[in-house]
Length: 396
Ligand code: SF4
Image 1 (cartoon, rainbow, N blue to C red):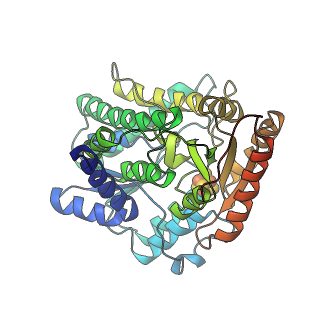
Image 2: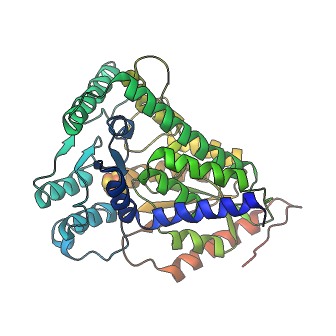
């Protein structure tokens, strides 16, 4: 192994360890910096503002523990992510955070936040609601005012004013981190099969947790030593959906063990998280507001309304760009925005004769063998419909 490849492997291992145990990283960061950690709820809170105040913004992750104490705190029909956050709050696992911020108002998410408030009454929770409809005349002003309220709340939280210079610096740091991650997504899309979908997830998930500059330094080592692994004849898939949190790595591994190669995604813990940058020139609060408004144009989200852009159009465009042979839609069970949007996705994929499969996920109990059978059936369907002369391989 070359020195660069060894350095990349070490960096990847370090990032994967953070992705596997975010709480341990947060505890280490607090100990070494003496700073405050803020739990940020998905999917649209502008973490740049917390970073600009010198605190560590951590996108709250589902953990792997079975839910127990939290089971009585939210109804069974809440999504697995929100029920697990309630469980973490009830078990004291969120006690290391000095505050919580959110900008999204999914009803289920707000239920989880209410549990956090009730279980951690001494810890500040700030909710600033960004507009859901992105094309109304009043939307830009409302988005700007909400961003300003986040800055003012962060001023109070950190005990000093967060200046425009602080914000501009953090925007540049976050943009650079997103750019590095996008480089890896572009490389995968263009044909480099060097990273598995589980490894890609670890890179994004660790970015959601770590100090961004520290993360970028490790990411540069991964990129520098990664090398090129050309695609083989495996069936190429696009993974779509899974809002707010990461699908289990073993689910991704099962899909790949069936003989598929993931070439692109629009998962939240995936390309969706890094799709859009904020402008580095001009008023930084305006830039963050505009990034929020632009993000849905880059990659439409079913929790937002923008009449000019539709997720199904973007999905078909992404499939054509990457040359994916099919799509697996990963849906968090009981995720209402995704459930309501899914018929549109299915209709468009059917119209374009793109083979696809829906897999619903829960916090506990991944039915690996059922998933394996269904993925194998999808791959078989793709094999049967492959263009004459194109040889597809099953490598497992
Ligand atoms: S996964 Fe869906 S239901 Fe759960 S908090 Fe996110 S948007 Fe809401």
